[in-house]
Amino acid sequence: MPVRTSESSSAGSGKGVGLGLALVSAVAFGGSGVAAKPLIEAGLDPLHVVWLRVAGAALVMLPVAVRHRALVRRRPALLAGFGLLAVAGVQACYFAAISRIPVGVALLVEYLAPALVLGWVRFVQRRPVTRAAALGVILAVGGLACVVEVWSGLGFDAVGLLLALAAACCQVGYFVLSDQGSDAGDDAPDPLGVIAYGLLIGAVVLTAVARPWTMHWSVLTGTAHMDGRPVAALALLAWIVLVATVLAYVTGVLSVRRLSPQVAGVVACLEAVIATVLAWVLLGEHLSAPQIAGGAIVLVGAFIAQSSAPSKASGAPVASGDAHAESELPARETAA
Image (cartoon, rainbow, N blue to C red):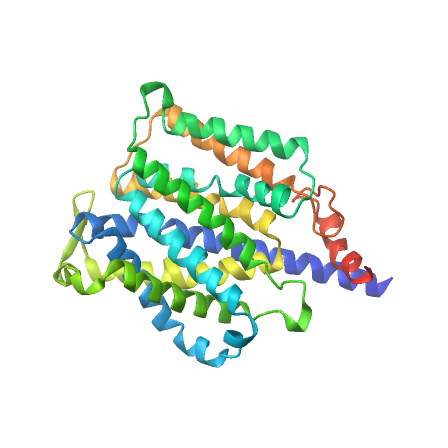
């Protein structure tokens, strides 16, 4: 009995740490758009801002990549997928989207990803999806219709919305790939190494696409404006690189490893709320009452969809709030 209590306490502690890391990641990611948009409006191309973000973070994480260089031989496909989807794909599509539509709308569209994860579970992993999960997807799509105000003939740039949707699809890859190897014990790839090489690969890909040698570098030596308030461009870039990228990815991947793609995806939905509030306060991007209500429905739908996804071990649905059921999963997986 004492051993069982100890294991339960350890599992609960690990889950608490995972939830805390997921929250930090959501806050860090949520601040990227409000820092990037002033740089874009100051004259930088969205792809150039993405390149600066990823290349700067890759430089910071370079010592970690050198330390875990064996990953290149052991898990090349994982590193390539993480770099292309979770880094280059998500960031490029999202930053291109916010150059055409409001930050809050782009994030709300992107956070259809938790519902899209169910498509992966159902059609790729071929596991059953519960009725509650299907209801969550329907709510998320309905809420999105309110956010983009479809009754007014699609009030936002259609290309911007498609770019935000592409970011959502790439984010599915982020959640799925972040969980790869989490059940492999000592053979699991080090998450920091995966992030470091993902950033390096993303930087190489974006260098070919963004062509940074054509960038207006002089913008970085001046000031940008947040709703009329001047801010040093380098300060915004430092925030994007150190907080909204390095800290966000490290805490995000570690949280998925301690929780699951489903549960981490639920907490990550807070990023949309945080980004919308920050854009409202710092950029003056006000949303209408139907858009706010639609955003709330999107988040509720994503929460229901994710928390109703089946567990890895049994294929049966496990609610994210059921701490006892989740604490028993490692034991059942070990027994199997």
